[in-house]
Amino acid sequence: QAQSRLEFIADTYLSVSASAQHVAAALLAGRAAIQAQIAARIESNYDHLRAQCAKSEPCRVLIREGGWYAVLEIPDAVSDDDAAYQLLERDDVFTHPGYFFDFDQHNVLVVSLLTSKTVFEEGIARMMRRLAMI
Image (cartoon, rainbow, N blue to C red; front, side):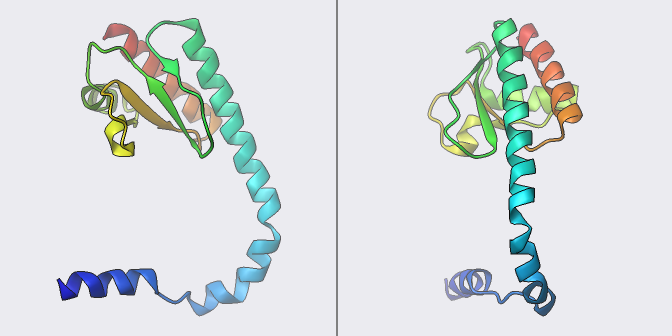
């Protein structure tokens, strides 16, 4: 028990390296440009996902309240865990089952919106094909 508490303290209160401290001001000064790029990518990918799900029946995009993930409601025919596994094993698409994010329902997948546009769009196309088969 003591070791676990010491690990927590060490992880929580680790000091920042000298090199990170040295460039911190420059990194913070450039944050607006980086934040704008991230926000634009997230919105573009979210818009693409909504458009793809609106075209077909296998999923419904839930309202995004912030962050860089999108939540999808998928058919009840398969659990989110099985769907995530099939997508990874058969289609090389990485999603998260909803229970990773404390969803009680078992037909939820979570996808990252941070992925580059071309990779994201290809992954969504593969996901839509897989969900149509379920």
